[in-house]
Amino acid sequence: MKTAIKTLSLASFLFCLCSFDLPKGWHAAGSKPNSYEMGIDKGKGREGNNCAIIQSKDKKIKGFGTLMQTSSPVKYSGKRVKMSGWIKTENVKGWVGMWFRVDKGNRSIAFDNMGTRPIKGTTEWKQYEIILDVAEEADMLAYGVLLGGTGKVWFDDIQFDIVDATTTTTDKMKLEPSNLKFEE
Image (cartoon, rainbow, N blue to C red):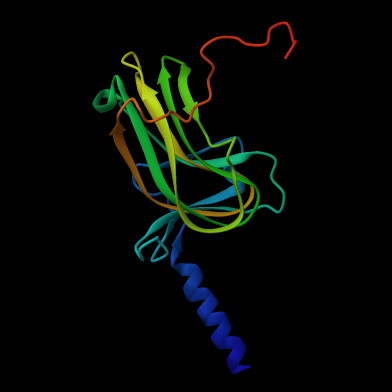
């Protein structure tokens, strides 16, 4: 009986270290944001500090939740920008991706959500990068981490850096239409 009480007390203590209050400056979005708990996991960061967490509440989810921010592109206007961040996952059935979008008006002019290189299953902390060109006419940057399906994702140390033009972008938007006669 004492072992069960100790286990329950430890589980309650560990559960309390995770706050599902949204981190300051971040907000929840996605196609199914209410199917996820999003917040701060205290002491679970890559270097022992806090990190953000998204975890599924439902057993099956057709859709995704994201913890995201938007900001002005002024600092990066006309530059090539690398967004990097550290991500760790647990039991992801679906996929996880860091994402970065450059907008002008109501349309995206550059975008990468790691859809072609998804993170799945259980992984340890690993750094990921997205590299996009921020056009001079851009009026908003949007970015975050998404969880599609079920599982948990932790992320930490998101950073933006200007890189030179020799660094290849990660968005796969084509410069012009291709294979329009379906011969390839």
